[in-house]
Length: 382
Ligand code: FAD
Image (cartoon, rainbow, N blue to C red):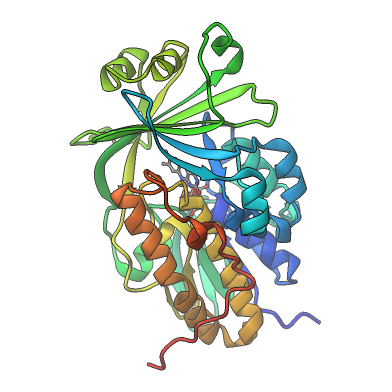
């Protein structure tokens, strides 16, 4: 008989899929509820550093990701105008040797599909928008927009930046618009063949107040991707993204290096996203509710570590439940926060400042982290 607590995960994004997969593997009866009716392959890429790949190894999809992704040998930072190199951060074999796993870049949709496939399909529910939870002390009762209810011993809010679980714990509060947007576009590499230019596997072009990060999202290097950071004082569109245009990109990156101009010329579709943040939250869990990922520490994406933090959270949460015993969930959740708050808050801060790898620096505190091996810090008694 299974005496592990029953767990509900709200949201099947990257953090929710990771925690769902790890919990199910560890034998926790876990259901995952996602509001979307289905997922589509949105035009976006994502970096997966060695710190995340170690979690992917545990989930059992490291080899598939290594086969699917692009393996840059370096992260380059270059002056947006002159092209001068500002940093050359070794990845490739160096990362595998020094940090214990590969550094890859992939298509976000491909990664997400692979992660969602690791969940038990009989316990994954789409079209389930959580509207309320009632933590009655013995159980949490969840109510969904379709009128159905369900219950669990523990509920994990992996429901993103506008988390309903966060709101339940801390009250309504909109995330902070950072004053920056990100443009995202995927370009067919066939188009780039017409240029006598070097399109590097992972490069960030910088100027004083903006940047463009560029990398391949497939191992065969057929899809190249850029994501920008550009100041824009207000965001009043009320949606999570809008369409942008080649003209807007030309204006935003006027005077930039010919490689950047070529990318803009080859752009067919480009979207624009507001970058949202929150200050570190005073509360990550209460009674039978707990948060992870963007629900508790949304950040500007300028370190390419937002999903990484969500996935690390997932692994640490499961580790703490196993360490303490799922029946002593309060202690497990305290242990979880004690081992995640400082790191997630530091990554939020560096992301906010947008200084990461702009100049040569040692990234081992991020990439070398192994969530399964890190000695556990014990929470101060309260
Ligand atoms: P989300 O991915 O937002 O998932 C939340 C899920 O919950 C969604 O599926 C949503 O539909 C569901 N949901 C929400 N409310 C409810 C509800 N009430 N009921 C049921 N379901 C609900 N991170 C990286 O590590 N590397 C990168 O290279 C990178 N690049 C980025 C580029 C940009 C432009 C942006 C904006 C972000 C980037 N990030 C990157 C950050 C990363 O996307 C987020 O940090 C990550 O997606 C957070 O994962 P999550 O699972 O916490 O939340």
